[in-house]
Image 1 (cartoon, rainbow, N blue to C red):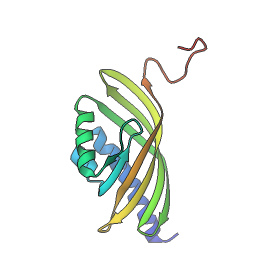
Image 2: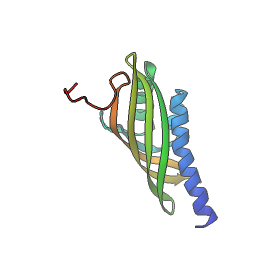
Image 3: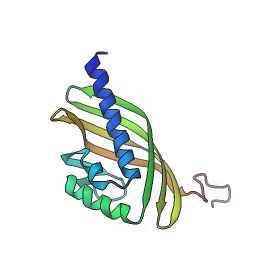
Image 4: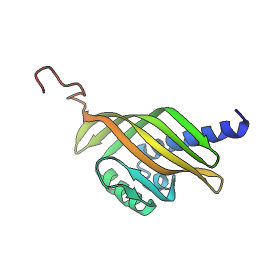
Length: 144
């Protein structure tokens, strides 16, 4: 593995970390700048957001009354020149509609190098669970 490949992998992993960092801080503009101009975000529970403007507007609304504290890890990256794919796993703490939430899932990403910097071409979020923390994520034997 050459120095360039190592640098590219680290830059892509840093991209995912920066996304999480900006979400923690509710820095919507900075979050959307991590995407290509025509980038896409698929949260799995709404129409796919296409383009920075759509992502910006959706995130502004989502972060208005909610707080998201994502932790990303176990990042796998497959490089192909100026394009790459990857998966990174997500542990999430959030406040939504006044409730403390806990979640787990993963992002399937496509990346591209734009003017020397790596950007998200697309992100697809798959949540394994997102539940109120007092309920937990395992159903009891009585179905509750």
